[in-house]
Length: 364
Image (cartoon, rainbow, N blue to C red; front, side, top):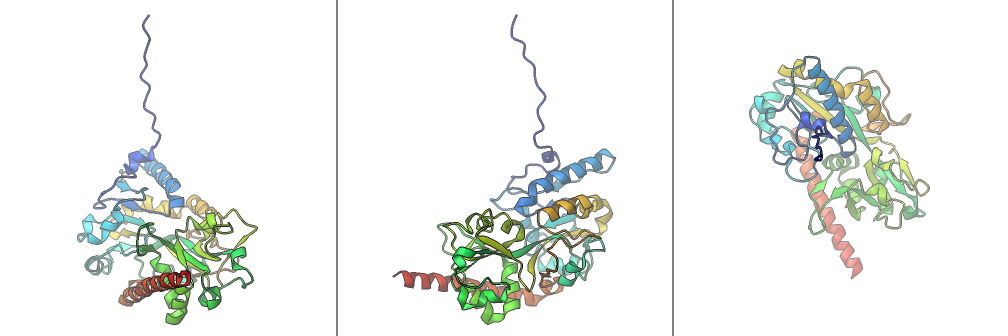
């Protein structure tokens, strides 16, 4: 008898792809999506899978399907970068969930639509006092925050030597820590300047430390490093710094606990918001999507992963007695914030030139 062949059903190894499409697609347009979402890398896969499951259940129960995209790739132009070119309200995603620190709206769109209350936060009442006190709740009700990435200090005690452990942001401007500070940034090995760095960190430090202190902090940093690399190197023989500035979740991954320690700055950890905004006219339709981000189960795993959740009627998910600092949404929307950021970025680039020039002089 001839060999029998049997066609096996195709395995659905990535059911979320049915909801979100190809997560690594480049050139994807954000226009007219129901949901466009991004999140920090450590959260992406679970968030994508959970959302796909929630959307699948919604559709199975008779709900209308959603047009969604959540990019996972690390290269190429992302839909988030296209948002600022959108002029028409009906082309903007109905719900935008973002971990980007840039402005998603161009100035004309903001004036015509955002300032006319076409967008709402979807933020439920009842966030913990720590978040309210830090100014994370948008007084205009346009931006909602579902979680934060608190930036803390990871100390390499061996590299620090006899110098005291800094316990505040202000101490990082002390010349005592010259050559010791490493904060987030990235560039290609063959690149001359730094193109990827944390704008919010620069802005917050400029406001907190003033011009002189900000310059001292910048020039105390011999280099920048991707925050994912910091816990791998801190406490090792290859560690380039003594004080690393990075998200709490990544600081906690450092395996060399006997040689490192995490410090929550006295002024408060810098709160980097994970935020959302929704078109008000579509809020009822996209409520099942937004509701996922404040669901108790979502809040639990966000807290467990050290991205404190702003879900209502629960604790703040930060160490007892510790606070957060954030410049506030009204400030970030104001024209002066753009001017401050421009000044901060200019000083940042000058500081890199200064540090690299001084390094060359010392080496010669």
